[in-house]
Amino acid sequence: MKRCVPAVVAAALAAYALAEGPVPPLLLKAINSSPKQRLSGVRVIEFRRGPDTIRHEEFVIRDGPRLRIEFPEGSKFAGQIIVENGHDRRHYFPDRNEIHVLPTRRDEALVRLKRLVKGHESSSYSFTSQGRYPIAGVSSELISAKDAYGNLLQKLYIEPKSGVVMRRVLFDRGGAPVGSFQYTKIDLAPTINPSVFTLVRKGARIVTQGDELRRMASEGGFLFRTLPNQTGYRLEHVRTMKPGGQPVLMQVLTNKGRKVSLFQLGTNVDRDQLKRMGRSRTESYSWQEDGRWFVLVGPLSQEDLQRLARMLTDQP
Image 1 (spheres, rainbow, N blue to C red):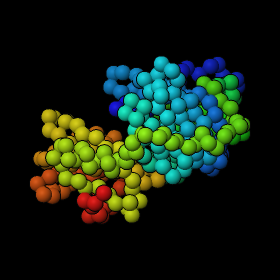
Image 2: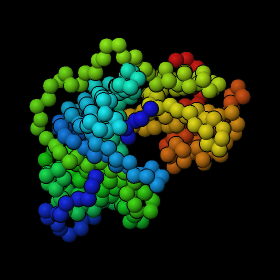
Image 3: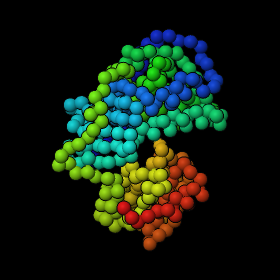
Image 4: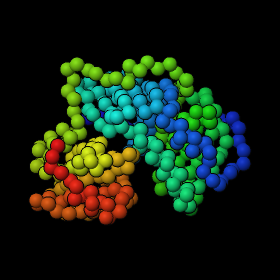
C-alpha cells in the first residue's frame, strides 16, 4: 500500500544582518495561530529515502484542525483522499475501496515547532533570522534553527501576517536536506465549504489500525498486544518486516504528537538497531512474554517506558 509521506528559493526580496538571540516572535506566532489558520493551496512534499529523493504534490484545504488533501492526475496517489475532522484522520484508498481510520497528524506538526522552542530554552538550539523570501508569491521570513554547535537543523519560511509555515526544510547530521514541504500556490483567505471535510463512500470498507494489527498478528504468528486508549496513545501505523531475516511486527503509537514504537519478534535483538528502525534517538525497554520478545522505544524515561509496557493489553 502506498502512503503519503521544494524547490530552490527564488531571489530574496530583502536581506538584513544575521540576528541570533531569543525565540523569534514570528515562530511563536506560527505556533499560537496554528489552530486557527485557514488556507487552500498546492504543496510539494520531498524527502530522501536511502539514495532516492521522493517527491509528490498535494492539493490542500485547511480550516483550523480540519484538513483535506487530494492528489493530481498522474500522481501515484491519484484518487486517494485524506480528511481530518479534528478527531481522526480518514484515508480513502480507491484501489482497495477502503477508508483507513487513523489518529490526526495536526498535533505532530505543532509538537515539532514547540520542541524547537523548548530546545532553545534548554540552550540546545539557537535561531537566526535571515530576511524575506518569496514563497508561492508571498513574502515569507526565513528562520533557521541550529544546535548548540551551530549545525543547521531546519529552515522555516513563515508568512508574517498569518503565521503560516510556507516552507520547511529538515537537515540530516551531515548538513544535507533530508525532507521538506513548500507551498507553490496558496490562498490565505479562501472560501471553504464545510462539506469538504466529510469523507463518506458507500460500499467502502472501514479499516482501523486495530483491525490491521489483528490481521498481521494472526497471519504472522504474533501475539496481539497494544496500548489501550486510556494511556492516551493511539495506534498510528502497523507493519511487518524482516531485518536480518527474522520477522518483526512493528507498531507506531502517538499521543499528542509524541510517538513510541513497539516491536515484537521471536528472538532477542540488538535494541540499538530497533531504535534506529523506530527513528528515535531515545530510550528503549525490552522484556519477554509467552516466548516472544518485546521492545518499546520512545522519547521517554526507562521508568515511563516500563510503566507503559505494564499497560499492554490483548483486547482490541
